[in-house]
Image 1 (cartoon, rainbow, N blue to C red):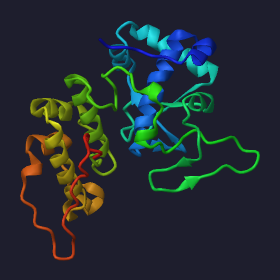
Image 2: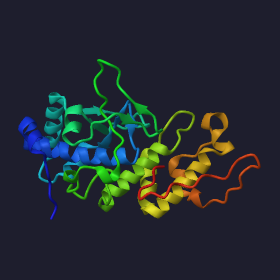
Image 3: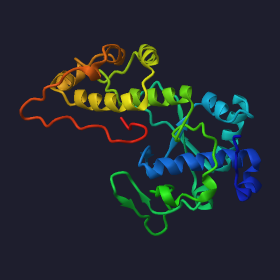
Image 4: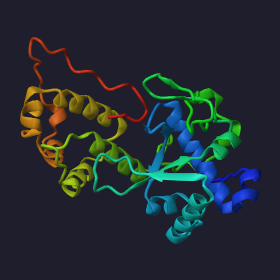
Length: 258
């Protein structure tokens, strides 16, 4: 049975629905902090569409989720942005304000994924993000619905959507223009790659992005993402030029970082 939890202090401030939503956001953001993911403008973020969030919280409609988000933004505890490389992608990204991070013990000098620690100057507000160790995340964050945007075991549909979005964000634009997302998603859905194949694809994409052909003329010869997928480009044999090191293999993570 799936359980949904909330912090009583936050419930008093923002209502039970708002507290449930903030609790889930705190969990997902803590996971991203622990893995050094989605760090932008001094904060760690998580993202999802309203439709997907309504699936994650089956007792709320899309309209109810929209109202909860609007109320939390009005209260100043939920921040929104858009950091997708694809400018046509309107998926909303979320971050938490200091007051919520403090409740969950996540408020500390922020450490970006490059290892640089950011301290505030006298008179400035405390930064809103923290590099969090996986083992020290507060116990109260452990019992969160298993269907999560960047969690451990999302269901098949959500997992494929997440993996595709990561692939799409990592795939380089052709001469600065990105297009063909619908065709790429169709090709992806035919493959339905598991995590092992995604790691292999990530390594191949990293290889191709550094190849002379893809770097020539501002990416003029980069194939469409759908062509790359349909052609199973990760299976191509690759011979590196003498002055080029062999391609870096993808890190052995549960979910590839692309």
